[in-house]
Length: 159
Ligand code: ACO
Image 1 (spheres, rainbow, N blue to C red):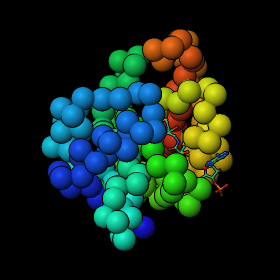
Image 2: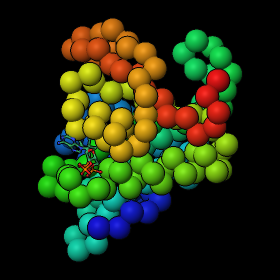
Image 3: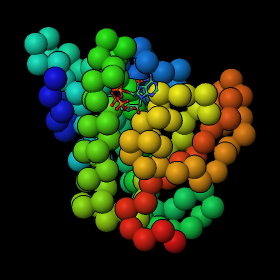
Image 4: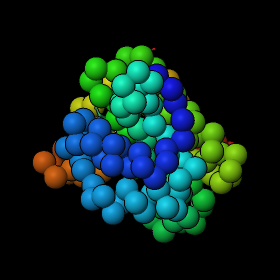
């Protein structure tokens, strides 16, 4: 499996992977928007033998956070890895790649994301492997009313 930056032709395969893995789905237009504006932050895990996209991270940059504070930061829109390719370190690798670009290219202060409070696998990755901290809990964030942790990982001095 190789980890590489996504190209425009990968977007539909990333969308496909997302549909298999998560109930939070997005229009193709939203993938296009990420691809056109934030291409350097999009990474895929490609199975070299089959040429199949087996994992991805979809990410963007933002200036303002939810409270209206202006601070350049990255945001992870979506991350998933096909069931057949989990526990191989692929999510960890695509996340580290996008973090590096957020930090070095965009000089982000931090990166944020939302995750279901029940998502043990993702929380293990974010908290234990990648050093995210819980910033806030957002009540009924998801369509089925589950709460979300709003998490942040700081690249620069915490403000
Ligand atoms: N249980 C507990 N911890 C886990 C699990 C699990 N099933 N899977 C991964 N982890 C943690 C561990 O700390 C692991 O480190 P270790 O292998 O040294 O123990 C660490 O995460 C890294 O694991 P990876 O192998 O890199 O993770 P993987 O490639 O399997 O992908 C992911 C993890 C993306 C959460 C995957 O399980 C998945 O696609 N789940 C469904 C979709 C999803 O929940 N995506 C995240 C939604 S939040 C968002 O998109 C912002």
